[in-house]
Length: 108
Image (cartoon, rainbow, N blue to C red; front, top):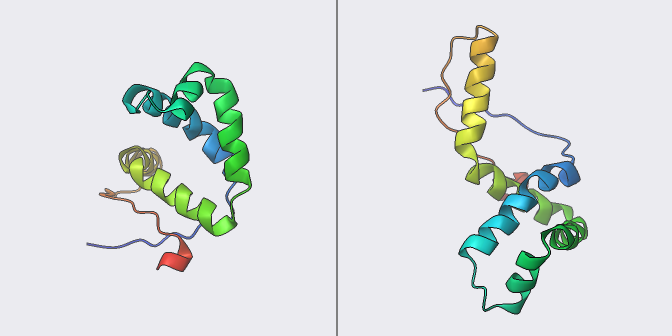
């Protein structure tokens, strides 16, 4: 087995979280405790809730945003591995990637 270490130096956090916030709110609505008044309000106004969550994330320290981004990336490992394998195949690179794991630098 060969391990490939890739470093990401710049992330557009706003764009990245824009993609995942709607799914997060949908999951909370479907699986969350709707007795909780905050979750109930979020499920009734998903657009407003997305703006609030985005604002909250924007106010977080960079290390916290990196940690959150790693959690989201790791939760979507299958999608990432599939995309990378498709890219390799498209470019005639004869490898098969089996897994991916995001780790924030301060957590190494």
